[in-house]
Length: 106
Image (tube, rainbow, N blue to C red; front, side, top):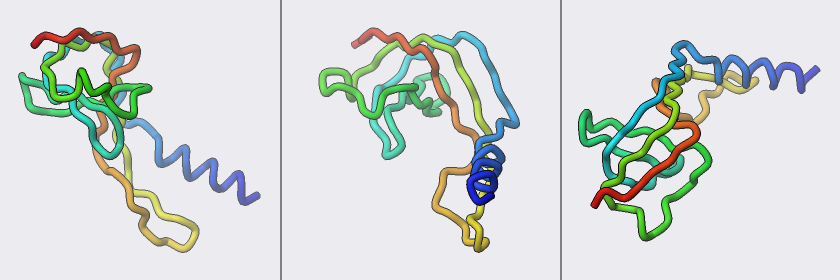
């Protein structure tokens, strides 16, 4: 029974309010964050997480790259454990690039 409750909590935590599945091309700076590798867009200064990459290789980190892939946007909500204690978590919109391919621009 407890496993079912945990699964339900995880499903509600990961529920997507907004999901976009569109091809994108982003030019920006390759950087690492605590939650994984990102590209910080030159156009809007927003960051996009890169699926499957925890950190950029040293020869790419800090460089301007052009990245293509499928944009998926998740809207995460506040979740609590069984005792109604708020957990440390990132809230709000998370932009994730699936099937990433990149090249160093400069």
